[in-house]
Image (cartoon, helix red, strand yellow):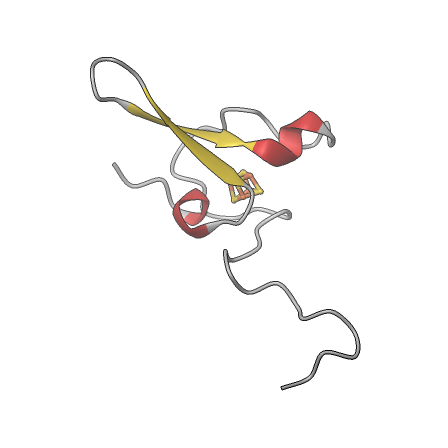
Length: 63
Ligand code: SF4
């Protein structure tokens, strides 16, 4: 399944049921009403999108 942006988003949690179906749950929905817990897929544009693993480093921690 093509989930669009959710596939690589830091805010997604994937769930698999007994039949092997995968669901994409948006964890931002817990604290922001603009987001749906189970967004219609594929998501092609999203204000909350943040690529997993690309969060900015903490201040003062340069490499
Ligand atoms: S913030 Fe947007 S792209 Fe990220 S998981 Fe939620 S709906 Fe998907």
